[in-house]
Length: 107
Image (cartoon, rainbow, N blue to C red):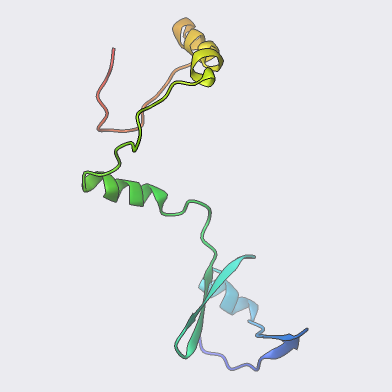
């Protein structure tokens, strides 16, 4: 769909009104990310928080990266606060599921 429009004054700025069919066809919502390119302004739907993190982690793992930078240090949280979880698992009230298909089972 091609349209022609004129920028309008919005305070000290200028804006462009987009017809509803254009917004719907582009899949835009209440939040967008405008990007400036030579000779163009590209408006895309705003990415959600952490969008792409899972894919980035997968690529890192494939390259052999992702190791911890420091040794794991136990804290008061580990020692005291997680006791209820361990006890609930022992009673069978809570089930822990590892969603990593490559994980090794530890019995």
